[in-house]
Length: 532
Ligand SMILES: Cc1cc2nc3c(=O)[nH]c(=O)nc-3n(C[C@H](O)[C@H](O)[C@H](O)COP(=O)(O)OP(=O)(O)OC[C@H]3O[C@@H](n4cnc5c(N)ncnc54)[C@H](O)[C@@H]3O)c2cc1C
Image (cartoon, rainbow, N blue to C red; front, side):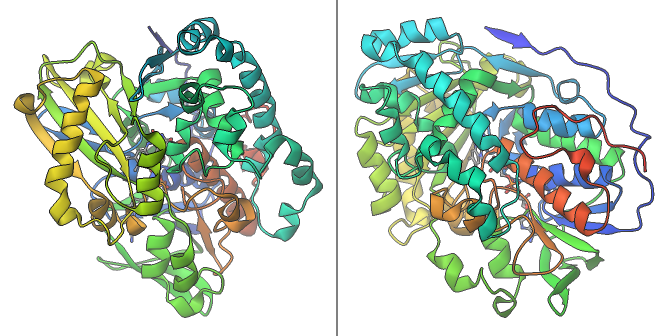
């Protein structure tokens, strides 16, 4: 069952501050760059976005061919509140710009070890589903959701604040959270407080894969991810998540942001330590400040000379822990598979072994876990009539010498296609009318993602908050970061939030009013920006 969200009329957009004497250059038109462009333009500065690809959206863009349309990356649109707030701040209504449907069931989880679960946000039905696997665990679902509601509320101010120094890390507010966050525990361990059945624990912990991490290593904090899905919904924007990026760029243009697409930044320009502009494949763009949305490790190691960086040197970056990567297949098919839900996650029979292959052994599994999006069951704009699209994702190791994608791609492709039978999709090969494969090597070479680590730096505690590259980048003057490589982290809602945190800092530094962006942790959605 799906529900369409009603749309509301946009606020007038001619009330923006007009004195645009200051200019900001944004490197990259991914979700973080686009969100920052909207907010900075709203804050009254001139904004120019330089993007190396010929289109906007970055990893959250569309692949379109022969009437088929796929999301390249994100397919789960979660916690729309953050972007709703950003659209509201620029006088628009997100749901009017991009109609969305809330999915029910949100997804199916098929367990290689036996059994399946249709995960619905209707808690009574969810309990009944879980009871089929384990009646005792069903009784604990509400306690899990209630506890995580409190946890999210307690941690939200941290997600919305910049972490600019040790003092913010040692603040009393954060210390008070330790008994709730239990940073010494893994996500899997935390779920053991509620659920005994390994499959039920998996149903509430596989979301750590959104961060590119295993639930056995991922901090217990991230139990809030599955809570977010049940409380606020798993959404499908019509046209896919890429339609959201396209709408952001459309609105950005309407409020005065300019774009150079298909133009790569090759170097940052400095006056001593202060960044003053960028050199590109087509020329130069000067600005009072730079915002980097490009993949953090990729951009730093290529665009900024090592000697200018104190903390994030090449050597230090190489020692960091990076997320997993993904092997992707985008298939345009003749015929449909309407018996398969919109989202299906298949967990390998030896789930832990598969994770160890990805994170520790850095080899390809013979029986990999995988995820399939069969979006045409919800959205018939994505394929010609009588046809469908399948988006297949298998989490794999980031680039590592153990795997030579030039040699191993054909066999792994065959393996993944064969896996589809496990979720009831048969005879795919003879129905393929369009196919594109993206390997970790492609993520690195074509999409400029360091080591092909699609979810950026890993999210262990030693790489979060103060330890992650900061929103006001600590190594260079006049440089700011947005996107999955900075605080709060990877995943669309927090990436959009990074843009709000960064814009607040940048506008403050330029002496502009930033109060209208709202305070960290505030519950109310601020109204649109004041006229200057
Ligand atoms: C396969 C996959 C599935 C995902 N699924 C989900 C999901 O379901 N839900 C979710 O919330 N998140 C998901 N994510 C994670 C995350 O939301 C996306 O990766 C998101 O697009 C990252 O946004 P970003 O702003 O950090 O950067 P990007 O999207 O990577 O954008 C950075 C931009 O910078 C550009 N750039 C790089 N170098 C230069 C240069 N030198 N000059 C000019 N431009 C440059 C790039 O071309 C790119 O357009 C997924 C990611 C992947 C890869």
